[in-house]
Length: 303
Ligand SMILES: *[C@@H]1O[C@H](CO)[C@@H](O)[C@H](O)[C@H]1NC(C)=O
Image (cartoon, rainbow, N blue to C red; front, side, top):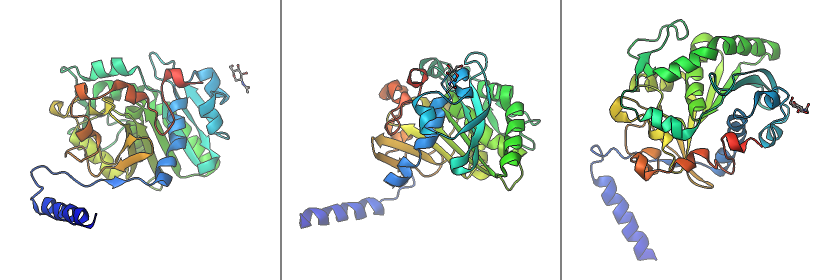
């Protein structure tokens, strides 16, 4: 036992002594069970966004709504077709305004995002004032976000004033995660600098280029993107197409076991999605739906 411990130490020292620059495998941090379970309400918000608007309006969407009792939705919109379903409301439990967007059929999403003719465009500076044209995002995400951004911003401002809160929380899964990522930057640029903006996204595809990812890193420090096991959605569109994720991935490796990954997805961090899902053939699309610590997300889980 002692000798094997010794050789393990020797191995660690040996590995540590090898120059790492080439591989750039950065260390990950295991997530504590408290931190992991603290994500549950946001997972439920992301799940609720898949429910029909009539049951979101009176917050009677089944398990997800029950888990978030007291939440007060004030703006519910979209049709799940031309416009993804979304809701905005006030959550007294954490004294925050919550904005959530629905995702989409993952198989369709992956097929759209593996299209090599995928387009990237600069952000619309009327929505994202001051952002350089070198910052580019997937044009489909950009256009979808623009459909609801102005009315959502108006509602968020109204709720912040009505409840005297400086906290805004953006949530979404899949395409909804991409919209939440755009929202987080959008709110940062359009709300007072005293506003504390958080984002929790689940199974989010890459939204934009590395310049966009760096802008999220700089402007939205309270950003977390949570990925489940071998989900392939987070690895599309490919980095070879010029896309890149911002920092702070939380990777659920198996139930109860997650790591916090350092940096943007520009290095092969052990145990993070970039290493565990090297290509779409080695992943599993079913992992996209979860369960994220016991909570599955998708149209069929709105019960
Ligand atoms: C909420 O709205 C739905 C759909 O309109 C309705 O069926 C349900 O009874 C309502 N629930 C409550 C608690 O008001």
